[in-house]
Amino acid sequence: MCGIVAAAAQRDVAPLLIAGLKALEYRGYDSAGLAVLEAGQVHRVRAKGKVREMEALYLADPFPGGTGIAHTRWATHGVPNEANAHPHMVGRVTLVHNGIIENYVSLRTELQAKGYVFTSETDTEVMAALVDVNISKGMSLREAVLATVRELEGAYAIAVISRDEPGRVVGARRGAPLLIGVGIGENFLGSDAQALVQVTNKIIYLEEDDVVEISREGARIYTLDGKPVERATHESELSADAVERGEYRHYMQKEIFEQPRAVANTLEARIGAGGVLPNVFGIGGDELLAKVKGVHIIACGTSYHAGMVAKYWIEEYARLPVSVEVASEYRYREAVVPEGTLFIAISQSGETADTLAAMRESRRRGYLGTLAICNVPESSAVREADLKLMTRAGPEIGVASTKAFTTQLAALALLTLHLAKQQGLDSARYNDLCAQLHRLPRAIDEALKLEPQIIELAASFIPRHHALFLGRGAHFPVALEGSLKLKEISYIHAEAYPAGELKHGPLALVDEDMPVVAVAPNGPLLDKLKSNLQEVRARGGELIVFADSAAHIDGGATRGSILRIDAGGDFIAPAVFTVPLQLLAYHVAVLRGTDVDQPRNLAKSVTVE
Ligand code: HGA
Image (cartoon, rainbow, N blue to C red; front, side, top):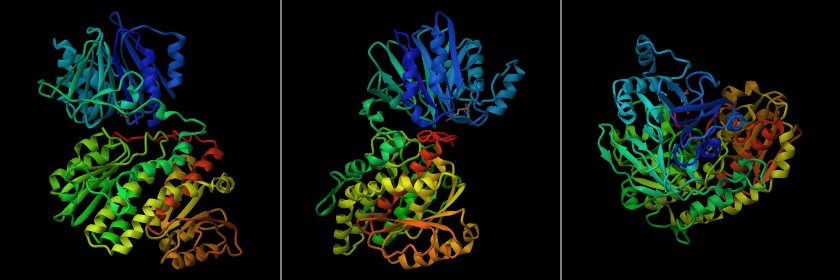
């Protein structure tokens, strides 16, 4: 999702801003721009496409200046083109924005009546005009931004400069992240700490409705009513190297192969020989979890699929009722919250707008408490939750999530075990589940060895337009995740069904042009799944079966392939079976020549509603 970088420094900032935008490229965007203030003049450059295209324009005609703002845009209002790219300039004011202004139409109409002429289709441009109106009334840039944001409905993180105030950048946030990077004799704003790692690791996270003014000398933060406020400084642990691609062709491939380590890190010091260790969910976590009578899991996209797996696990082993819902639905309906219900938010970035809004909404719905399962320690979700369990996947750059998913499963497996023990699961079964979880990193490592076979298989997908994915039980969400990966990065239309649903409709789609990918772990549902596969065979469909090496499945006389996987146990099988599906999607996308790490129209860390 779109990114902001801003700087107030002695040195020329355009190269720093461009480097910051490049560090944010992984979030996905469609255009980029920057503006620098120098001697009362603003120089601006914007381009549709990649940061490097905007950079080329800048390099062809570079400009000096120590105060600047920059942006990568992921369009919500108005097509991706140069005119809609940020920064937007109105009068004295130049501004970049992440988020959506919901009342922009009425504001725009009022401003047009005052004679303002808009040059873009964005909601953002009205903010620049409003700040300009307020400056005309004699306000400073900071006062003008404060007065402007009080009129806004919706979500924003902004960085603003004024021709009349050299050396100063004003920022503000509501519902979208913004943070300050504290340097020596220079200061920065960024929408993500990753944007600033190259200049500083001292970070101040702004809170909701904060307004900040940075200059070379320092940063001053104000609440919405204009009162100065202090916010703590953190040392960020991010490093620039963590986002190197190394020997891999794409970040996604690197991240798929990082999964054994990422999962091992997520389990480290949280599960010992005797089971899940005390207090892994934070201070007071065990006491709070002891009161849990039920669970609501809220998430989006891949994280939602992780939540669906957890529903099967927690209901089976801890015998507690679990509901899983996508955040964008949950936030706008009146969910019933029985007493003793734990609210769990799952988000890789911890900044997913829908998940955060759902989490905030949950505060007034009477939950026992909130638990965030998240990959970014300083994120809003983590800061706002009562309990947290960090996945330790490291920065995930590929837009299509991979290691975030398997580490979320590892974290949810820890939670399942904790709740299962507390609810009196038989100790032999508990020990077996713990032993399986200990084996998970190795089992994933083994599954990665299927890559050469999967590359061969991927070739048959090149001309395909559609694919079906089937699974049963906790492997239905795995099938959903496999189909999501394929559509996200290869643009092949893919759907997933619980295999038993096939005959209730989707079987009508099966013919020789429709590959059907089935996830077939060993277990009580295997025989049922085999019958479902016969239904596909009987219609000439091409079957690709990912089967447990312990399962008896034969290929039959039809087209298709069987790939054998050692799942390492029924409990961890969903995490292990995910890996070949990720590899399949990855290699199909590579063969089809798509932009694997930044698929079209998609963004990482979806910070707009
Ligand atoms: N609404 C603005 C900014 C979009 C955004 O935040 N994307 O992530 C626009 O459409 O330009």
